[in-house]
Length: 147
Image (cartoon, rainbow, N blue to C red; front, top):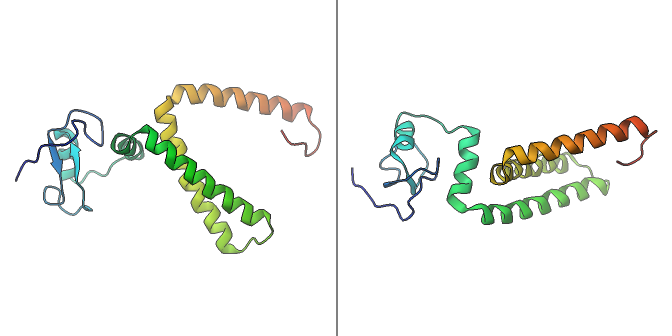
């Protein structure tokens, strides 16, 4: 097996120091991959370990960086807004709802990456505050008033 020096020094999966760039030649039955990887993650991949959701999200941040992922979040939010607008205009075809679900999934994935970037605890604290406020509004608001 040939060892290729990694252009980046961090594993794209876990962020640990990487000493090799892996390709399909070093990881059988995988999609083509050329990225820095540490020995532990490479071993898991060789054993057929599939990445967890959290590992996938963190890997995307490690590979492309927080700033780039924020740009992707903007794009995905814009696509979700378009999908919602199409449904709100009354077209509401089945394809429109499928597209809405797809864009919602894209935005959720990006939001989960942002949680990792900002810090899950920080987001959890804000989420609790917002839910408490919503609960108070539900207790004092009659009918369909917008929160």
